[in-house]
Length: 130
Image (tube, rainbow, N blue to C red; front, top):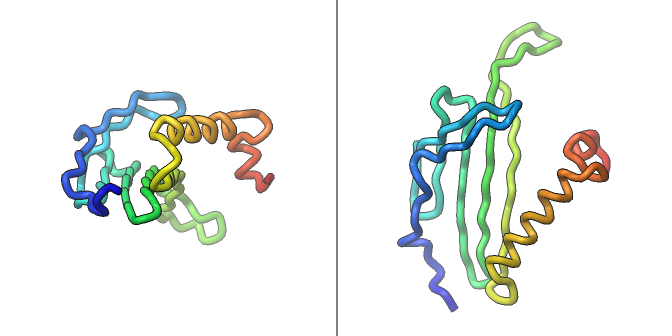
């Protein structure tokens, strides 16, 4: 069994460059905080944030990725402007045995394909369909 520590874990590139893909602009996430278990990154103007965390225990590994977008929005009831954030996150859980990295990557691709399908698209999911 692997040791239950993340010391010596490597960092991703700093910054992480993400190509523009309409309607999302090109993004460049720089590290603003990191420890032995993950990192928090922000893009230049602070509107987008990226968090990547890792944990491990006797039952397996967990990897968590969260992308947040913050905008200044007008409250339709009060007329006041305040920061509002939306986020999307993915959690990858791999048991201590039985699944390879390739099998987990294939499962991740399957969830992306499912959400991208017309039968279970994001518009339907955020429309409260299940």
